[in-house]
View 1 (cartoon, rainbow, N blue to C red):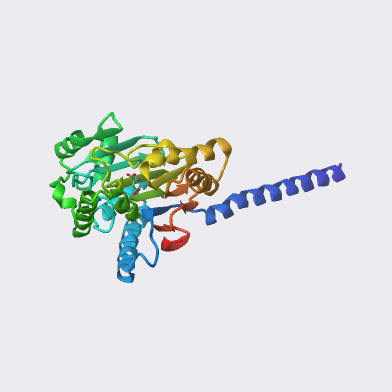
View 2: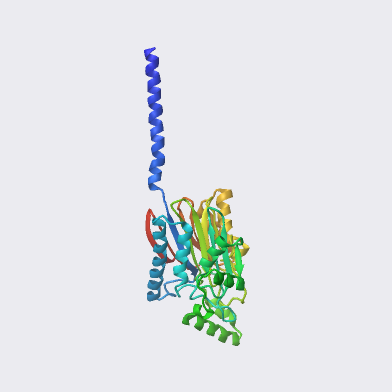
Length: 342
Ligand code: ASP
């Protein structure tokens, strides 16, 4: 009987030890867990040290850092991923350096027409505006479409009217112009007169759209994208940036994605959703899924561009098939990284 008791006690001891070790394991991973993080982009394209003078490189770095830290501080203080995405993009929309908000490219008739979208990975709610001409911060309007209307996408005059109605700052279209964009437009018009628009269209290969994806402390993902579109687009043309699933996607099941590049290809290939779907249905990692879509599928179609993303575990990825992409990222476990070239 005593022998039997000793046997039972030792079995119990083994059991207790094993369960303690087991409990410790998640505790250990918990310690290394990425609690929050974000990655931003300022567009992909022909961004090389030769094409970008040093002083301009410094300006981009400083603005990317400002945008990144705006989001980081929101997340660090317990803010939501949607707030981080919106506020980060506002910083870049207000800067003339990027093709979003102030500094947007012009259409073939010399107007600025802005597209933006935002998606909440927790609820799969989304909002977008397309072809807006007077909304100072299109990403904020996109968020309001999501929160205040039963719709996902408002276009053109309707989007501008909606922004006015709810009291968002609106501006004359000329607010978006910068000397740089006006010069580009004049050159375009000149070439058009000389009937060689293809050469100038080919030359402007720096896109400059902005985007942000974030994971907050509550495990919620969000993504947003804002752009003026592609230079000298036909007026009324809408790209991938305001199209949920093409330029922007977020789901707490998988990841949050924001894309930049030749929008028509991103629409046709439903790029952002394709990456998420590969993760959901194939079990691919974010990185593997993004590589497949950007570096294989799109390259085979000669489509240029890139993406940024963060998955539900806080893993961060930036993949592009162009010479460069403005990008920056940070998590609670890693320092800020700011890059623009390969
Ligand atoms: N994807 C955007 C568009 O086609 C352009 C860009 O990313 O720069 O409108």
